[in-house]
Length: 265
Ligand code: BTN
Image 1: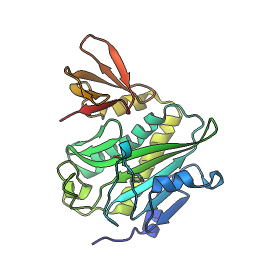
Image 2: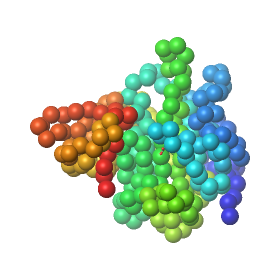
Image 3: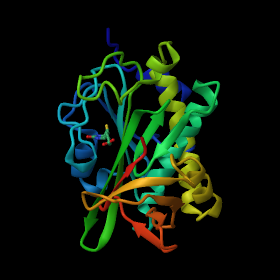
Image 4: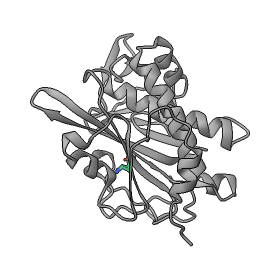
């Protein structure tokens, strides 16, 4: 059974100062990211939330589809208007961190949520959510940043091709989850992380690093589709959100998410 998102209950609980104070809700939509990308510039406010109970063309990273059962999960996007187009991937990771910290503080007894670089949220070693960040430019100027978040909340079954690697919060806790409360709490944490990011707080990167799966470990790497013979040591991210990896010769290499995939299992 799926249930429609209760906007009144959500608004009542939302304790943010500005994030999601403007919001759009659709029972069904192609994709919340696509919608916010296409919206005219004068309709975009800082922190605009677009939420739907069902996406017909949900998109994931690497041009994959993002499938999510109607009325069970959270599929939403946030529009930001940062003053520069630098460090954007750090902001995506900061949003992932907000979700990870929420899961570790509120959902599980033992800390078991982490970030899988570049954009996945893991719970008990399975993927519980993912983020898709996209930009809209007006000439050379960044007009908006759209951060789309898909979080598996109450879904109990997953398609065969992902059932071994995907999970939902409810599957892990064996309890139904209140989506309205969950979204309001996550948004509160995202707002806080946005402020840290905006103020260039150094600690943000350190905390992100501590929550990245494989941090400080030697792990396998696929570079440009090629599995590397020797492992690399994951040193964390730099201020651009690129991954810093120590190679066997003692050299430090930085990689963007298009270049590499981590082999963490
Ligand atoms: C991934 O893990 O590949 C990223 C998934 C991102 C999915 C979300 S759901 C809301 C927003 N709209 C989309 O079409 N995609 C993102």
